[in-house]
Length: 471
Image (cartoon, rainbow, N blue to C red):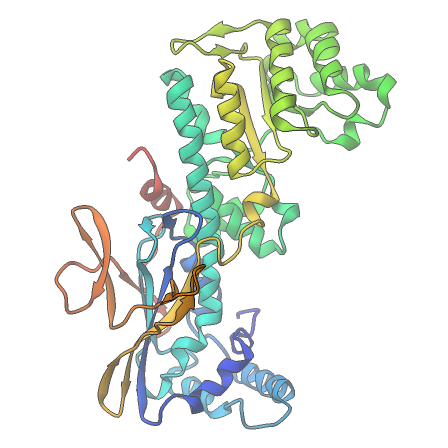
């Protein structure tokens, strides 16, 4: 039994639309697209979760209708705007299974903006109103798709610096070069799971455990893709105070004598901690340890702090010069930057390190709210619009074409101009293009949902492969 009442998961005004569409309407066909935004292509991800969690099978019950009727009468202040009979028809005729058809591009595929990603239409002429009633819920696909896109674009950035500064034998480090620290910074557990799973399409470092659980439950992941390591926090590092910092560092090293261990080191003075403790008193303990100590600065200007920190580490621990001419710390020591990290700062940090002859493999990043929360529907300008309708037996190609004022006071066409017709997505010379269904070309939008049943299922491994930059 579903825990959410689907009949409460729409914008209030949509409950009035069954009367507002033209009399005789029997078909509404709508589409979802990214109309532009920060990046010029979008990774589509998250649809199967919404289908499985909210739409599959019996989507609602009589009790759900009762609850919705009472609440919506209160919302509008009068009875009758909420149409009980509309939902009772679906319950009686289809057992509560939704008479709609949804087609969508494969999850994990990068599609250039301004192309259709999903289409939805009613399959019962009496349920024409249902198509866009579901818009509110389905539009939330913007969130996992946007996080997947952001993570994918950061992978492009980091990978470019690996290609420039890192020997091929160390390229595997890219998978763990960006770690998800975002659970505490998101608005809900659902956001953590969906956004965290979206990140795992491109990377494998994550402290958001629920992301791996969601990937297994909804996408049948065969492996756990969100990997993490033992790591300290300030509550551990500050208990004994500044005078006890050395003792705390020694205890941390002895607690996990093998493997990767991350240690926040800026509780008092990160430069002193690195120079006099990690690279001084405890140097031999670090070098003799069977694993890697990852030192974490967590305050200050990242570029300035890292510049000084790396010179201290090179001075104390030494370095080798790789085949591309960049300095690399001994394998027992690395650095993680988890403060002030976003798409822009990662580029600035890596460019700064590159100019100083420091290989990208020396540093990994942790990204929290900027990864899972500092995005919105306009980051990639997601929208769902009606593009085709049938009224009294006539077909209508539907579109909006607003005008707006430019900086010179001239009226110009808005970027919000929508597409018209029954749409599909085709590939021509390996490039995606949106056309109408009567044009030639194989539709890259698969049937994914029809009349309550899910028609396509992808594993998380398949999605990762489709989005891979190395395929």
